[in-house]
Image 1 (cartoon, rainbow, N blue to C red):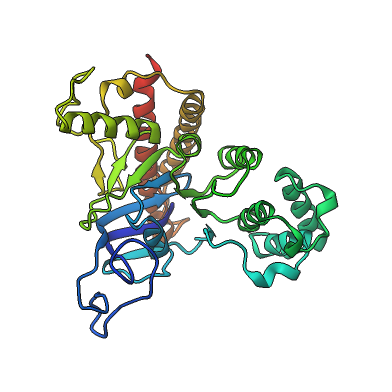
Image 2 (image 1 turned 45 degrees about the horizontal axis):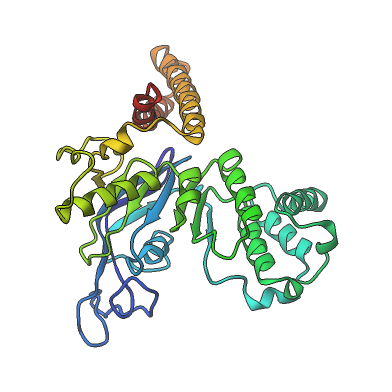
Length: 368
């Protein structure tokens, strides 16, 4: 998989249980077909979805209630079967999943610091030194607003909001490189949400997948969206802009459908090819003029600078490997090594093209 952590190939996912996107029992039949207990066909949540998730991808998953957003995430993790297609997972893939169910009741007797320390020990580099694990755990507790006076309390003694915060901390402490957050801002106070935003933007460098209806949170932490229509057909839209921009576009389309007077002309019918080169999900339509003409936000300017740095780093890696290929001497190195260099160059080229595409989308608006 190279730099890819997870590869979806023509994936189709059906809603479990009763046929909508909500959770339910697995109704798989012995022949692999999917149906409800009454024999009716299930609603398709996602159909013919192909996408290669690369490190530092930051994607929001949005759609109406019942569209199957949580079902989609669970299928990516292998918790639910696919109706069609395949998912290839990289050897270094490390999941982190914050779900809506909350901490398990069995965690009630754990002490706060001990629970976080145990999570740290389960992550990369953890478990080697108890002192190092404890230092990392206390640093995270302090950052996520747990004062030392709460560290030795039992989980069962915490308030509901504190338990949700601790649940988030337990997931982050394991240092996943593919992080799925399902409605993370529900039941978290504003101070904790701000700390989480800063952590995701400044420290987290893996794939981030966020299911949320929180416009402000999504605008700050993700680069683009997968829009699940919830229509039973499952055609996913890859929207290469913010959630606010998507809501503006939706409003524009609704006004157009109602034949209401429009303050601005409708967007052009042709969709620009701005999706990742590794993605086969549908490209987003051109945003309406009120989006295309909007200057970059402060977050987007920081993102533009980060993408420029990534392009330089990837180009340097590619040039270094190309120099090795150009100077290849069969008497000193084996052809297996040459093949590895060539494959790495191709992988870096694909990643560089993806980063350049994202950079161009923002750079066009940076001049406004």
